[in-house]
Image 1 (cartoon, helix red, strand yellow):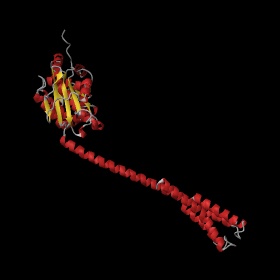
Image 2 (cartoon, rainbow, N blue to C red; image 1 turned 180 degrees about the horizontal axis):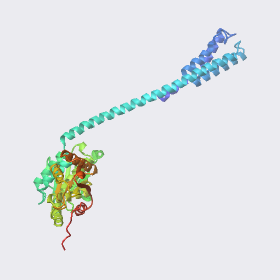
Image 3 (cartoon, rainbow, N blue to C red; image 1 turned 60 degrees about the horizontal axis):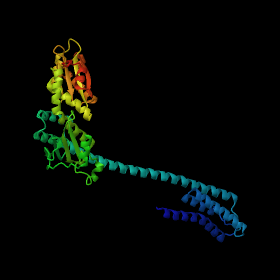
Image 4 (tube, rainbow, N blue to C red; image 1 turned 60 degrees about the vertical axis):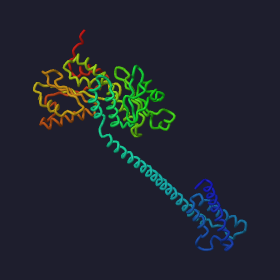
Length: 440
């Protein structure tokens, strides 16, 4: 009901409240001029304010009662009626009308409160139904994404590790093509290209491409931002409508190794909308950083092994890359130190752990020398929670080999060293590895 209709309805109500008592009194005076109020034992005239109170509430009941009483007294004073309303009848009629009006007002308030609760419940139900529909749609999309991308970043880095053995001499076309295929599989890039620096300038033609190759759009704002700030640049979802006025790239990833050398850029022209999220782009950035550091890490590995000659090359190489990956992308990794704490430690416990190693983890046997039983385990992409799960898995493996009580019962101490901002030599020194002094 709009305001004008509501106003007209209110005017009609008050007109009815004012006129009905007067009309009833006029009819009673016309029919029974001498005794309009006591023509029978039942006070018929007081039914008017009673019914008005039941219909409209307390205020109309009080007003109609007052009008009937005043009109009855005035009619008697003016000689129109032979009888004024009796005081006892007037009091009883007023109480009945006011009681009916009070009942109607309270009942109407409760009805409005119930209606408000019903309206709110309907709104909530509609909102929950809409949210459920969106959640179900999102769940279906996530199912599709998981079917298309059934593995995690650990699997991606494991594939990159195998690819890295081909990159010590630099980025080749075959290596770049393999990298783009990994990004298409893990990050759902559909159209992308890798451009390398040639003589200090980005090459116009891509070294490798997903989809149709295209020349480099040097005027693209994302490319300018990524090159100027040396960090990943991408359009957020709410900016996609402005792409016609901007460039043609959805995301740009600069390829810079840990020595600061600019290797190239990866430009992404097209990817699904649901892949344009920070988590997916962060994973792509971590993969590219891992890829870019391969040649640099090979040189750093030689320096580290000059200080720790018996360190396995693969272990040193991976530790260096993961430490730089933490510095550049904030990806957590952990070193788990297992060392004999008693002379009667069981070597079979270490053999059981080594035989149950996972694909991406790296194990260094006898890191403390041949006289001290021990094992150093590098857990890539493992924060505190993942490391706790790994240690629980270790206890389960030992119980399966009838070694109740875990590593401590087998005579070994366990320590965790997070791979953080410290250089790899400092991390290994904290693990208890002896580091040779540099030769002068």
